[in-house]
Image 1 (tube, helix red, strand yellow):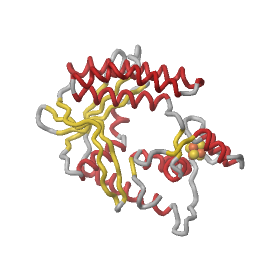
Image 2 (image 1 turned 90 degrees about the vertical axis):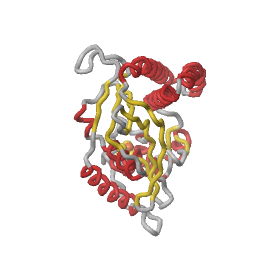
Image 3 (image 1 turned 90 degrees about the horizontal axis):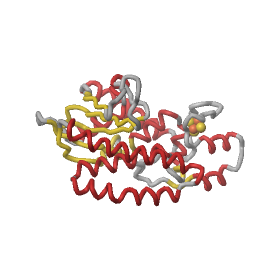
Image 4 (image 1 turned 60 degrees about the horizontal axis):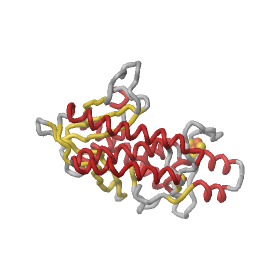
Length: 284
Ligand code: SF4
């Protein structure tokens, strides 16, 4: 990794998961030619909810224009992935419309900003974050608003430990925002019929981080950034990679699985790369 690299929470997470995956994603800058169906769902929902909080007019326009955009997107998706994309697009539209019905009755805040992008330096390396929203509650306190869609919503204890939220609060603190906590909103892709979230249209938690938790996370992140820098040695040769799975049998969800297998078996990785991946845009 060079000093010019833009760090994001996703790159930190990728490095922690598997250094080979991080190498594909953030050193070679490869990304799959087509988004996964789940990512397509997330992008539509975030865009729709940002329009909802912007204004009634903006949301009306979003509702009018999105079906045409979605059809254009579907036309480019390979036929073997189309059904999954169609399902996720329909889930996404349902999530946005359900949220737009639910939120006016349940929000106890005013949304002050949406999709807030910040870039700050850690050890002189720029770190970028994008907060879904900054909300002001009735007692005049400011809160980070994060939105997720979920086929299986997470319980509060698991969300409480989410390091992404700690990273974002720390970055917002550094940028001079005086944040009180996190409003964490999950929209189930389908209203569940059983279990702890049965019948819930939207699930919302109010979470906090102590200054000590934020400081511990800062130190851990600085240490990791240092590791990310030294993995590439000054003579241009990389240090050892650490694989998540030594036999690279990560069929459960690595988007570089095929490439990783071909390389480990000495196959034609260059040809495979050209077919499956494109170069990632550098600020994502
Ligand atoms: S397939 Fe496994 S070992 Fe290979 S890059 Fe992906 S997570 Fe890492």
